[in-house]
Length: 109
Image (cartoon, rainbow, N blue to C red):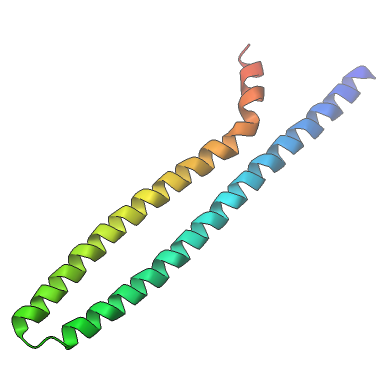
């Protein structure tokens, strides 16, 4: 009967590890969703301000200058945001893996 109890305990332990892993991933995805929503809000505000500046320009040169500045800052913002999101996804993977580190180490021995 010991074998069945050991098997049952192993199943319970693995389920607890899986739940911890899913919980970590869920928190990480919620953080990413909040980050994306915040970025979209800022991006919309920046786009609106740039549009107003371009439309309000007194000359074609000033309008082109405002447009160029907007494109430059938008590009830098997108690159920065993608870098940040990439790091957040990597952190999710690391955190989701942590509960299994001990189990993986035991299996290899």
